[in-house]
Amino acid sequence: QAQLVESGGGLVQAGGSLRLSCAASGFAMDNYRRVWIRQAPGKEREFGAGVDWSGTSTYYGDFVKGRFTISRDHAKSFVALQMNSLKPEDRAVYSCAALSGYGHIRSLSEINYWGQGTQVTVSS
Image (cartoon, rainbow, N blue to C red; front, side):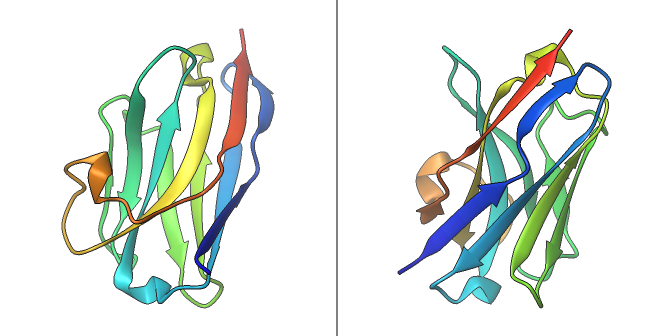
């Protein structure tokens, strides 16, 4: 059974940092791209960051502006999201997801597997 489990969310002051992790199991994860998607209260889901199957190609949503870094560790099947210079508007549930294929994600409908999400709250 495919499973994605996030950890690392919490409360941080504005300007601070958090590191989110996502552990995958139950599917051939080497063949899947991995992404982080967030959803703020009352807003649509929003693409945050993505990494290809090899871990060498990464890309980010417009709101990131150099503050986040996504990385992938094949040996441990982990994907991490290092978030720096956090702002109150970064408050959201951050979900890890996996999708087959290549290239940048074009639609959330491409996603094959979702994690449950982890809450990130940034105080001003």
